[in-house]
Length: 111
Length: 113
Image 1 (cartoon, rainbow over the protein chains, first blue to last red):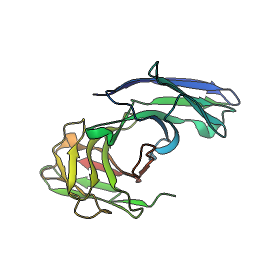
Image 2 (tube, rainbow over the protein chains, first blue to last red):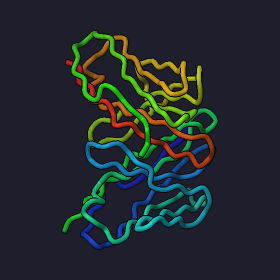
Image 3 (cartoon, each protein chain N blue to C red):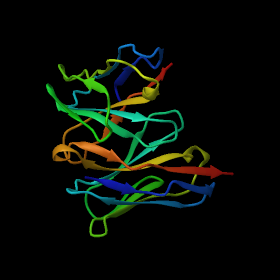
Image 4 (cartoon, rainbow over the protein chains, first blue to last red):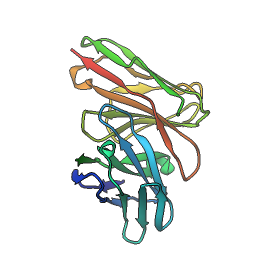
């Protein structure tokens, strides 16, 4: 099966940098994804890492270390609108066809 | 903007009723999913499909059923609704390939009295 661990809550102030960690256990690895979900909204895709290293998309970056079964999402120049829940996800299920999500990290950004 | 739709958006229904939650996507994705999510909580995978006539149960035990007769349509049915079914139901679809991106619908908020 699969399991993912991420912190339940993170708080930060506007303009700061925050890192959300994710450790995973999975029988077959097909990459680590990150999704953002605002309160009352649907999750939206942020980033994907299939290989070790850093992927950068604007203010957001995601890192993967397959040997450590570990990844993180880095959010820079935080804005109030970044207050949301962030989920890491790995592929699982039959032949790795389904995405399995972690429990989510609630990020609160204050002014 | 992803083209994935769910109806109804909100539903209040009595115990024992049969309900069907609709989900449609116009992106031609082979993979479709149903998740259950309580407010502020994690997403639980309850059903998924990787193509027409294929359906699989997810990690969360569910009393619901799904069908996939057409690529674009993936309805979820509860034969007899119970108060424990009160939750938000999110439908998603995804493209083939390792770098799969899932696109989520707006969700159906279900309240069973």
